[in-house]
Length: 89
Image (cartoon, rainbow, N blue to C red; front, side, top):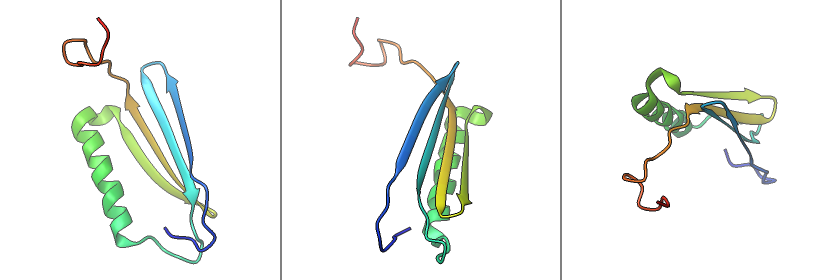
């Protein structure tokens, strides 16, 4: 959501075993509500994760105070050299 004073986006990425955990946090003006398009974008991303990874992936969006927080968990998959032209052989 736009904020008059701007804001800072924080991205945290960590690996736990075969899972990748991502948390994206940005300011959320407390006087505003979600724009309808934001919910649609989050729903589309969640659907794509579930189509690709099934139940192994999840996406959660929360508002805590003046922060909007999106958490994504998904399995780490390694590309084989045959499928990745940029992989070293």
